[in-house]
Image (cartoon, rainbow, N blue to C red):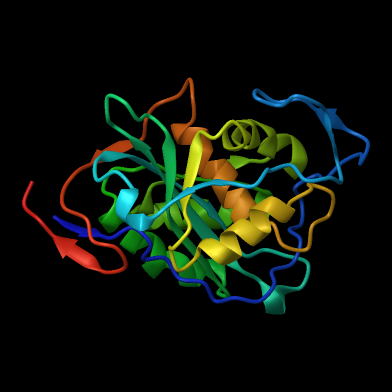
Length: 239
């Protein structure tokens, strides 16, 4: 089995545009999540500074889940498609969730076929989930018809509300980010700047929310993938 290493994701850089159809709502909404000590009004920071580690300290055995966000935005010439893969450690003393792969590409959804196929092969059996508007769900369903097995769900609440559950886990130190991964700077900048109130860049947060929906507390644990891992390139190992 060919397992691509943690940190192999790519970042095209630049800015994505706000997505259509996610139903961003009243800016006065407040939510208190698990681990929060006070309400966080919409328009302020939702995610605290992250818990981090080095790539070398990411566990080598775990259960995986990928979230994707497809490029249907207000300004189609600047669309970005994004994927975030999480891993829940399968260790007696460590059940935290690690961000192991982030990719952000300026391509249309139909061009994501190759990338999503690579994710399927890199993390075999791991669920791939999308929450989005009607266009995004339709695009994901079309990709699923090609054998990519994407679970596409229409977003029924705004970005701020959808982010609360994963933000609560993040703020409680239950989600770890390898600070030396090639994608970490862009990813952390976007996540920690997210307010849920018309952010210019939130595609990576959308993908994070979708990945968490399959691997977070009180749900399934994704697909287990084990074996030798190297960081930033493919590794071959017999299981």
